[in-house]
Length: 206
Image 1 (tube, rainbow, N blue to C red):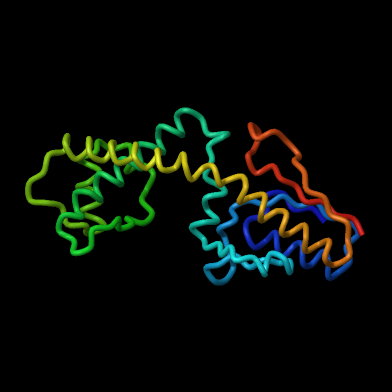
Image 2: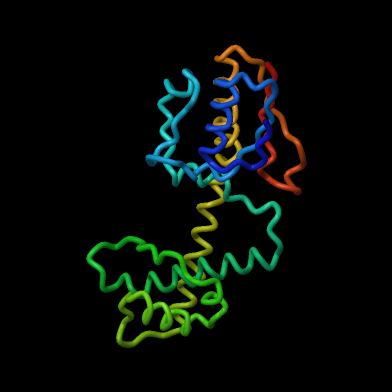
């Protein structure tokens, strides 16, 4: 049984079925750890994982997949522009809100982020109903959005320290479950991260 980049809970299903049906050999690599079938928390498979005080919600699990090893410079620039545009718009509409916190804008068409900042705000304002101020400076609002995006990237550098350890914890926890069921299990890598950062592999034979 082979699973290459089995998203989230699919990896757990594959492992559980392999063990319960006594499949001779298994090789599985996971990705998108935040894609859970049910509930908001990761459900550890092993006894040691279940006894851990570590509680991983979807937001925490998404952290393990937020690296940019294989993104092109154009893709990175596009992503940073999207973040700056979203944060700039949020800072504009937040002034009239009772709660001073970020409000998600939901999924938006990719082409919206190719628009100039002012046109982006007006387009989203017309279609998604965030109330823009009566008078505002496009240049100043865009500058604030870019500054805020740089601050967010700075915070992301600290959070990035935990990406690989978190991914390793999940992978080793799944391997422990296999061993717990009386099978041999190994954890390794099958390619360099420049090919894909989701390069951890669990293998097992009965």
